[in-house]
Image (cartoon, rainbow, N blue to C red):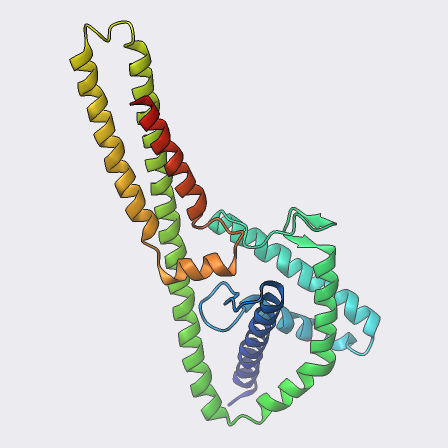
Length: 274
């Protein structure tokens, strides 16, 4: 294995190890915060990619200054904060959703980053660069290269497959969410249209009772058909969508509670008007 291949092997190894460490850290944090296991991460597997990229960037970029604790800390804060800001911004632009939101924290920037967590990332990186990374380097250097390449290849195949499955699931959820919104809007139109017809027909109700009943029944049937389709879409959820909902509670990928309440509100509204 030449120098370039060896460097790639080590970098990929570091990425996988720190992505796994980051996932473990998130799971522990969520367990302490919420008292239960939450598979916290963008992907299904036991890895948080932002930690893998973050530690690699910090270790490689700040290697020349790692002996100066103050400069290392400031550099780590700036690099990790920039990475979190860029990642949060891109995820929102791609998926039209905020995957984390620091809006309630003091000194935040549009919810993407905040001072408290930026300072904590700096501390975490100090520990990683000064204490953890030397041991990780020794561990990786002792892995037989052929065996390591095989294992890494298998892991990366699983990682890439996980990435594709997750992205496709999110796209599917977004399409379903759009369909639910369209159905909700259509039900609201039917409800409003029916109410207006009933209001307009009050004075003529004795003369045109049959015609009004006929139109009302058509709207009622259309509303019920849409409500049933709405309910079926709402209840058909994939494992990925459920995991993402648990991992990112503030992420509005599938706001079931809001839609259920809206559906009940529409049902009550249409019943009153009928």
